[in-house]
Image (cartoon, rainbow, N blue to C red; front, top):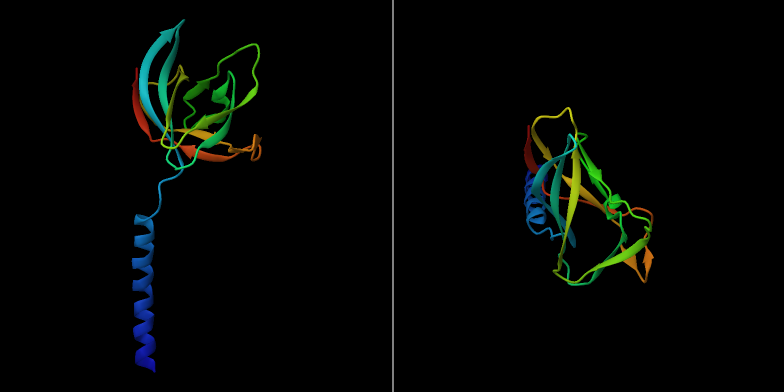
Length: 157
């Protein structure tokens, strides 16, 4: 009985490692993804700005609907570095809207970022979207799942 228990206690960790490794390999792609690319950097009245191209992709086989704003859609985004600030569009009439992404559709947007005046050098960052799913014209809560983009690095001087 002792030899059988020692063999089982050895096999269990091996089985667990194999099972968890295969589960990681087989994990599905998320239904929604955010991808960013560096755009143009410019200076306006002594303030440095950077445009970022954002791609939102529906990786699922179903149409996805999510909450946005008519003008300040940037309110649903955040950034992981204090040296960059998302610049929101200003408008006279801003209201909540519902956006749709068909299966495998990619929607492109351009975001303006303000660069801290004290920062120089290389800066790596990601952007997250607060994805609030909408079903039957009703948002599922006040905040949703955060979907982080890939990380990019920019040189600021």
